[in-house]
Length: 116
Length: 115
Image (tube, rainbow over all chains, first blue to last red; front, side, top):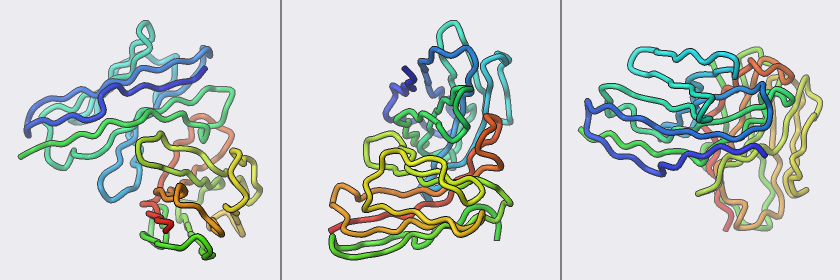
């Protein structure tokens, strides 16, 4: 069965701290895609990254970095030097290759609060 | 305008009312979607349209009726809703519906409250 687990319901940090958001997934497919989306208070989900199951290279984009570990079925997201504008709900999602991209299985989200 | 635009942002309706949610995308995408986001539940896919044709109805009750007149516009017609239908309804679009490398672009959502 497909499943995405974000065990951290809410995280609170002080500005400039580093923070890691955990994501663990379950799938029986060998080909799949993993996503991270950000949902600020305004409501829209903002696409952050897509990673396919054959690409285990970690990725860095500015203050954001992602650590994909197939051995532990995890796709964790780290924000370095966090800022108040990073406050949002972050969703991890899974899409199996047999399905189209719209059939995203979302985790329940992690609410990040960055305090000044 | 760019991106995916949803109107209204907020909607309060009684259980006997009929209302419609509107979504418009300016990205030249071919596929559009309705998602429901309820409190403390993961996002749920409701409907998918590809080139104006409905390709997915995820067991949604008939009190929700989608309409897609063209690839840029998507509506969700609501009638005789229940209080448990109160949620954030998100519209999304993607370039293609059958490619896994096509990320979804979401609108700001309509916050619906059914009284």
